[in-house]
Image (tube, rainbow, N blue to C red; front, side, top):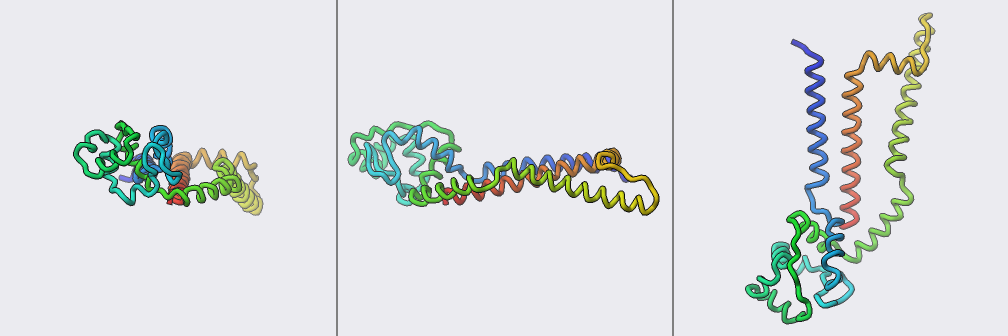
Length: 221
């Protein structure tokens, strides 16, 4: 038997699931080089640079092209053990005797973020960050975009109300104000409005996440 309430509830839960999947997809699929930059700054810059020469340890520019990620993760997590068992680690220890590399105890996710940051190109990073700052200053904020969208929505409602009133006048029926029309529509279509609002939020979230992913990709390409 056809049951609108059950269908509405089903669509509501489906919307929540899609929203969760979208959030997970946007945040967790790729390592975050921006977070990796923070880890590098707090834990690595006392001994290493990227493209600015040797400190007590080697310059790490292009290190991910010279060494594979698993080796780097092992070295970062347990350098003392690798100095005893790995030939290249022994060579580094002899070449940089003042670099007393200590284990960096971070989560697997933070380790991936750090490696992602080390894989970014130093020259392009500075160039693109400058351009991104310019775009941020020239572009519109998310709040302004939301205000514009809401304004467009109210404009559409106003146009539809005007058309409705003209049709009523042509039929010798009493017209309604904008507020009366909105209240009348809400009272009749409450469930549809709730579902429409949820879908509207989901679409905005998807667009926002896609734009954020594009921004991160361009910044650290």
